[in-house]
Image (cartoon, rainbow, N blue to C red; front, side, top):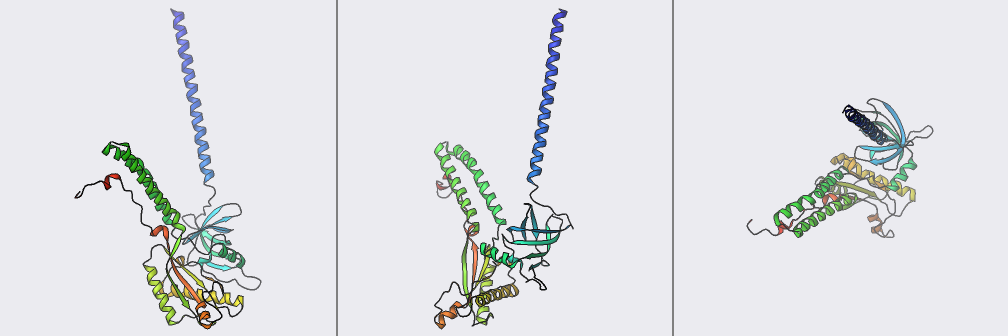
Length: 348
């Protein structure tokens, strides 16, 4: 009897030791997995630079994204930095020997532009820009690649959230239909309606980068002049009033000349005419610069009339002003029509 008890006690002791070893191994494995996950999370966050509050910094890189008051610049090491623009930010081209650069507005900072930024960090980790410098040639390249900005990007997240909520309604609506009608066909009809609503929302998201003209007007100028006459100012006053009631709008301004004169002179004159329209809208109607697409002078290109006649040349000496509205924001919100709503009896 004593031998049997000894064997039982030995077996229980071995089982206890084995259980302790297995528990230690599992704990070590969980610890290593947690450490690996933390390392992965940290490495995924090292691509964006956080600038300490008050820290002065100079960054040389390329603009990756442009918003209304900020833009993201990526340096040669692949590090992204969020730069904040203020009313005190100096935006100029780089000056040559014994000459200063040319002043520009913040709307000239486009995606793809190579530039230098000097400033200091704020409490949110952004770099508040004091000075921004770039070459004239780099600006021309960026203007060619992208001639208009993409405002209202903040609305994308809201529309995407609506799409996710509508996607989650598929299962819910299917369950409600099954409980009410007790048939698989009703559940399928409800699910198809929900899928159609999600597809409609996805179409709205895809349209957020598509702008359609809502209002267009032409401002005419005298020969070799960039001055606005009373009739031109009245047209711009009307454009400004219509812009106030528009939703998710931007204003596109393009300057032109007739075919008389040299190519370089016409380009400068057309740019001066476009700049005159921008100045009038900003100074007289407080149109925010972020709502105005970078004005561009096309010279004698894109003529709308025959330059061989006096009347035709007068029509070509113009600035075209367009109010563009985001098509994705003007579309009606998609709805889901369940089978029960279409089969309800009158009076209910």
